[in-house]
Length: 496
Image: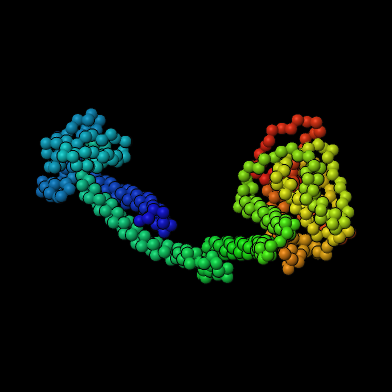
C-alpha cells in the first residue's frame, strides 16, 4: 500500500473510522447483552432462593429442615450446575449443619444482609470457578406454634460457568460480525473511492498528455464532481497564461531577431561596400563611424533587452543600490544624448525642475534609464520645430517626472499600447537607429520594480505626455549623504 496515495489514505481513514465505530458499538452491545444475561441469572437465582425459602420449616426440635424428600435433594444436586445452599441463624451468625450435597465438606461465605431484601454477591469458589450468591433473612414456618420464631439467613448460589460461556460466544459472534462488516464495507468503500478519484486520474493523464506548444487544447472532465470543476477551471486559466507567455516569448524572440538583423545588415553592407575597392582614408573613416553608430544602437538594444529580461525574471527583489542624487544634474546628463537630435529638428525645450527639497535617495542606474528613454522618445518623435516640456519635482515622498511633447499623430489608444515590447506607432518602421521599441516597456518594468508607476496620455492641448512616479527619500540641502542603502522589495507609493 502506497502511503502517499490519496485512495489509500481515504481507505485507511475509512478503516480507522469503521473500526472505532464498530468497536465502540460492539462494546455497547456486549455490555447490554451481558447486563441482560446477568439480570436473567439473578432472576433465576431469586426463583431458586424463593423455592428453598418455601420448603424450609422449623421442626419441633428447634432445627430448620427442608420439607423435601432425599430423592429430591439428589435430583437437584445431579444437574450440571447444582444449587449451592447453606443456612445460618441470622441474629447470631451460628452455622446450621444443613446444606446442599454439592457443599459437602465446604462452606459459603455469609452475605451481608440488607433488611428483608434479597442481596446478591459475586464469589470465587474453592476450585476457582466464579459464582453468584443470593441471600435473604426470614423466619420460617414452625411445626409447633408455641415455639419462639427464629430468623434464618438463607444463601443460595450457582456457578457462572455457563454464563461466561454464553458471553464468550457473544464476544466471538460480535468480533466475527464486526470483521465481516469491516471487510464488506472496505470493499464497497474501495469501489466508491476508485470511482470517485477516477476523474482525478483522468485529469492527471490529460495534464501529462497536454502539449505546451498547442494553445488551443484545454482540460475537460464532463460529469466530474463539483469539487473538481474549480481545479479544471484554474488549470485552463493557467494554460491560457502559459499560452500567452509562450506566445509573448515567441514574439519577443522574433522581434529581437528582427531588430538585430537590421543593424547587422547595415554593418555588413557598409563593410562590403568598403571592401569592394580601394578607398580614401576619409571614406574608410566615415564607414567606421557608421559601423560604430550601428554597434552603439545594437549595444543599447541588447543592454535594454538584458535589463528587461532580468527584471521580468524576478530580479526586482534583488539588491539595487540607492544613492543620493541631484534631480537636475541627472536630467541634464540624460538630455545630453538628445542635444544633437533636438538641434537638428529645431525643438523648443522648456525645463521646470524643483530641487528645493535637496537631493533624493533613489536608484540612479534604474531611474536614469527611465529618464533617458523618456527624453530620447520625445526627441525622436517630436515633429521638427515642435515643443518638448520637461518637468520634475518631489511631491511628498514621491519623485514625479513628466515629459510632454508635440503630438506626432498618435491616439490615446496607441499611447496605452506604447509600453508593450517592440511596439511602434508605424509597424513598418525599422529600429536600426536605436529605437527598437523596448525603451518604454523597460520604463514601465523599472517603475514597478521601484514601487512606482508610469502612464501615458494626451493633454488638453493634444500633446503627448509621459509621466513616471517613484517613491524616494528626500535629503535637506546641506545634510550629509547617508551610507548607500539597498532596496530589497518594491516600496509602494504612499497613498497609492
